[in-house]
View (cartoon, rainbow, N blue to C red):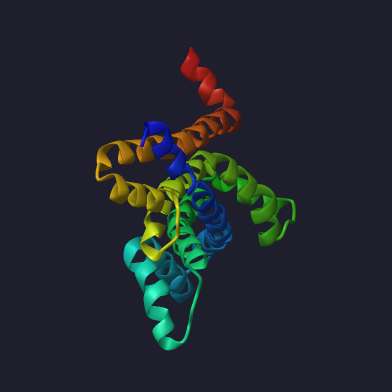
Length: 219
């Protein structure tokens, strides 16, 4: 089997890799925003509960979570598809990190921003939605792009729960060819080809949201 044939076979799993990534973002984005903002706004026991949920998804081993949700839950009568489990686990794990970026971005804003909103008679919710979040999200966008890249690379784990992604295809080809080196080199190239354009997009976003800083670097 030629290198081109190997690479073509691996890319046969790209649809699953892309699907897990996109569905994972559906879980990740709302969770990160809601829990990041909640951690920023709450105090006391409520903040402890929010932080506990975040840390569960951020600190737990992804492989173990995949096994628990796919293989253990059916024992208690709850059955989820492999796609649902893969997207949910990877998405919420990524969201655990992203929520901390949201919280940190909000906390880094000048306190005068909130005070100016209060002086204009805006409610706390209006200040958050109209003043704080737009500025924080602009500053956090490069971090979010990096987390998307991490999510794409993490999809290689879903082959453990029978999803035929690019890594699963590579394992199948390696078992047939009995020569894993060219197969996994092709797999490495495949993930690079998927992730590098996202990284370039992230650099463009960073230049767009921080034009002054990027201009100063060029001086």
